Length: 486
Image (cartoon, rainbow, N blue to C red; front, side):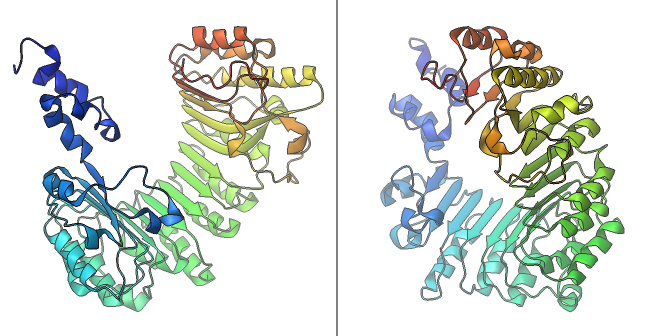
């Protein structure tokens, strides 16, 4: 023991405290005394951001000042994650040798070729690198850089965005990453022809997750038989031939372990083609794409195994399709969807997803009188009360899109979104039925109109014992506003 007189100076006590401190908050306890400084200082420097906020994507501020160059040299042995960009190599002497993560944004420009050599040297001196993330490097790279990258023995994840690389450099990168587990390729200007793939590229049996942004790049999938996750962020249509090739690979069971499909800006026919050739989907994430009749019918073959589904900016999507998921997917644990109307819930079948843990759907009730709102809310609470394993209940309006298009949803009778409002979270509307949600940790009703009384708020505090976070305005007139935590 280091000090028997002051328990706060015991090394054992300090280490226990350190386990509960976020690295971003470690600067404060590091100033307590020399003993605490020794323990917490490595946490302070675990992530080092030396990028220039003027060059950051979106112009986001740093949130904190960049470290002084001499302090960075002094604490280089503590840095595990380094974030840099265009001005970093000019203003700092980077001597880190224990990096696990390297993230660079707008680093390389052809007018300053010495940056490539400096970055290559940084790769060479860090044998423990596991993650490399390059964003906005549009100028041509060097051969030595790619050779240094693929020679990192612990490399598991590479993300590249807008990287201008030759076919030769891409072949060196692809063939050298034998131990890679995850790869994300955005806007990579490399010709992925059949001849190039067959003659220049090798199979990566260990690759489990891949993200591509062009349909032409799907030709690379034939070299990834061990895929578990396929993310397709579509920025061009690519041609029907490539789409049929992708469907052929899926139908031939080329990916026996593929369980997760994530797509962005994909047409309904393209999504239906992928889903129609898959029968083991456990996770489906759709962003900015329609979930039309064709793709929804193709998804039906995966209802029995589906565990997670996220529909973000998916419109138009009628309420009855979301209900079908709740009524037909017994293993469902997570659902996120734009909107679900209370009238459709009342007319629908019982939900079979009794293992649901996160429910993030904007629920709307028709505005045709106070009594109707309360009855609609009461019916919804009755359904939600049966989901006894819920840990997160999010019924706010931040997932909702104002599309006003339930053209093929004949069961919806609430009218458009402007004639609807959120659930009435009061005891008079049956909110007390949620007392069965003993595991609930987060309740979110943001952007909904509420008139909760002190009694309603007290009931939440007394009955939802595990609740840690409440988001939303409890009373629109200003009372009980923004209840922070239970």
